[in-house]
Amino acid sequence: MLTLTTEAAARIRGLVERPNHPNGSGLRITDDTSGRLVLSLAAEPAKDEQVVDTAGAHVFLDQAAAQALDEQTLHARTDAQGRVQFAVGPQRTGSGPE
Image (cartoon, rainbow, N blue to C red; front, side, top):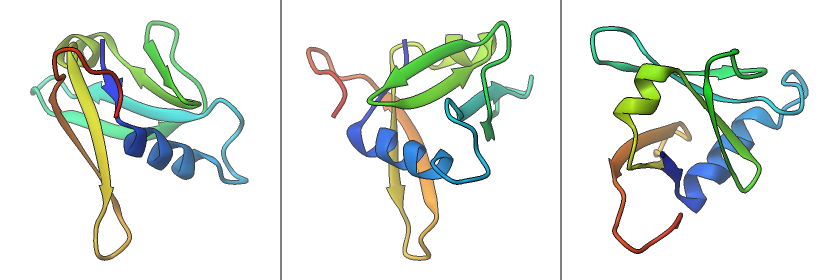
């Protein structure tokens, strides 16, 4: 199952904790059928999506994305222009979310 670093969880919460996003909103990750992952904000998970909840941050994964991201960790950072950038890397053995 996908894990999130502490920084990724904080960045996701920051993206959805705005007045125009209802409680329970999260980051949706879908596979666009070409193997490319697409990120978007969503008010709630779709019926068949896997939900990852880490420290109050919600990630909604469609079936293909959940399979592709199994045993991966979602990382985040903010670039010099203030934009959040996400990256995925392998989970470290014996460690949980950072």
